[in-house]
Amino acid sequence: MAGPPRPPLVLIAVPEETREAVGRLFTGHSIDTLSVADGRSALRALYRYRPDALVLSLRLPGLSPWRVLDRVRDMSDLPVLAVSVTYDADDAVRALQAGADDYLTPCLPEQVLIPLVQARLRRGRYTPAPAELIEDGWLTVDLAAREAVADGHFLGLSALEFDLLKAFAQNPGQALTREVLLDLVWQQPEADTDRVKYAVHRLRVKIARATGQPPPIHAVRSVGYRYKTPGSA
Image (cartoon, rainbow, N blue to C red; front, side):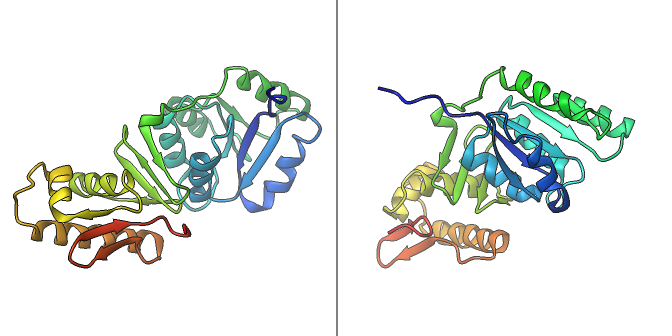
């Protein structure tokens, strides 16, 4: 027998100094919340926890909240409530045109906020088709948008590098020969295997620069390369 449905999850992405105050507004309303205080953490939480709505501060530090909003709209119709400490007509117009469902300021009475969020939650949760995303908790590869995020960091990849990373992500833990990679990525299994070596090197460099961590793509002697999720056994 299935258990009771879980409460909806609202992701609150606001600066550190306002996280606690905003979170308290949801207490006692059968709504679970998860708070983050910067843009990259917001994206990481969106991928990892699949919230039912997003409260997004337009003063969020780190990765621009506008970039976060664009990314949300690229991947889903998740309800987004943009919030600002002061009313700014330009910000309001920009937020709504970029895909926010509401633009809220402190002048909104507290007793109105929860019904407003609940109304948005009734739209239902967006769940991407399984084929659109490859995820393992550290790496997310968005096949539709052709973008990748590693440990919460965007990877600025070329088309070839994206296809190479996709091949690794689709075969975690497997040693892929250079010939297999030539076939999967270049569709040229008879081509010079040196192109694999140089492409993997460029991909590893970009992952290391973006994450500040050793890239989890390892050479397998006399075979090829293996991607292993960080932290996996």
